[in-house]
Image (cartoon, rainbow, N blue to C red; front, side, top):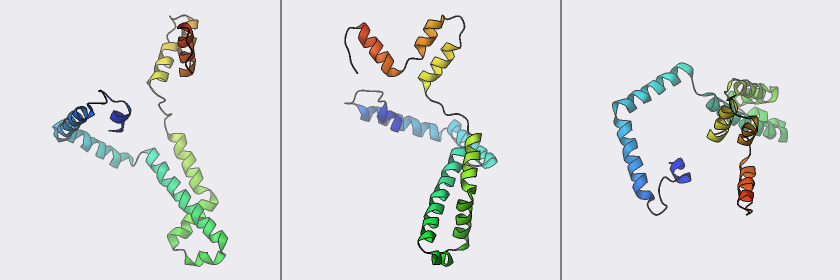
Length: 160
């Protein structure tokens, strides 16, 4: 839904029709045999491999924030330690020993590199073609602002 709002496939005056069509199509897919099979396959994969790395990292970051809060609370008054339950005491030890930070680092090392978008991917794949002259490969790697300035200069106008 956010994608449709950010990149509208229709005029701003008629979004209701497009959203209604999208919602109807989505519901039809969800109820179709392919949609049901896709959900089952996804569930099996999650059960087999556990949560995605990004989800695990998110949970560890939440534990890290809680551990930092507990550490600050204990620093305010050392008698607060007696009020902690075993779970929070364990979390405090993990936080202070740096175990949570190590786990986050290990999971980040396992993650695949982020996909930076279609434009960058196209630039990389076109630059890999050896039959193209070098100067056109370099032009593929211009930034958006450079392209804007370059195109505005060619039209003798400047937009920055």
